[in-house]
Length: 332
Ligand SMILES: C[S@@+](CC[C@H](N)C(=O)[O-])C[C@H]1O[C@@H](n2cnc3c(N)ncnc32)[C@H](O)[C@@H]1O
Image (cartoon, rainbow, N blue to C red; front, side):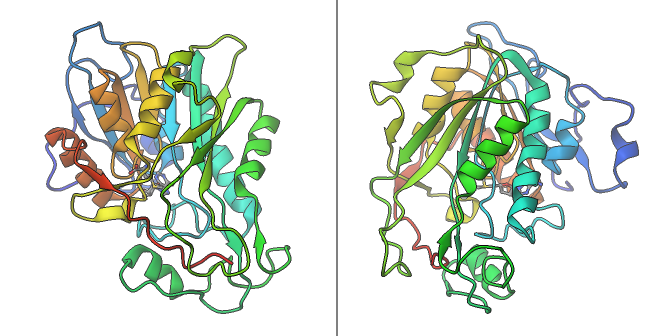
């Protein structure tokens, strides 16, 4: 990225790295903060390190060392909800449900490899509706990321998704079941209750969506887990949505810091290494930093990588505002 300082060496430069990818598509690492390499655990009191890689999650993960991460927390793009303007490799705009589920499971296969045997993975997923109206649906002129998606016929608007019209697709569980097939152990389906979520303008004949899923996935029978982090809420977490007050607002679809904090306190050992393969505005990295954990963030969007870098550098995350959740215009 032009405006960023020259990148430090990659954490584990595998020789095959650039051979796999056309030149110019992958600039890694994007930028990092000191002190220890991000794949090394830090000692208590040591400044945590962070690194941001700007590229396709599959390509960047492909270059990371096996068993080098203690905890993954992420929220991938939802199926046809937003346009992150990140290019052809952007996930969330696949022609079919199976294509989307396959893209997430591909990323998670690499995550499984880089996760330590004692590691935990916390995967936040939301659902989508199949409108099948045969034309772009809804309008949201105040929200560029969602407005752009209305200009083209999305897979959830067109014919051929293989479901009756107005169906809730069931994306989270389709992904969870596919991950089980791939060998992941599914330990919990946490319901993130977005208590203060705003009404969905298009849903006149069904309840509004006020929850999302956070799946806890592991690769071994013994793994790091601190129950105290749950604060007695167990698998239903009452956490209001947040909106980052900095520029570009909710373009990232950020999840709340408290949600990430809970996952990290429960699932990451002190001084451990945290990974977010869809880092967006950098919520995971910022919370990890606040908790004294080392963090690795990946995002395809150069613009987001820049914003995230500035955010981590300024440690400005704490400025969050109460939610004014955008109204979902694309639900059926
Ligand atoms: C829901 S947002 C993540 C928001 C983040 N949790 C936060 O709090 O800011 C999903 C992110 O995935 C990124 N993304 C989409 N396709 C990607 C890919 N193939 N590799 C890496 N990142 C990708 C998008 O640019 C977007 O920033």
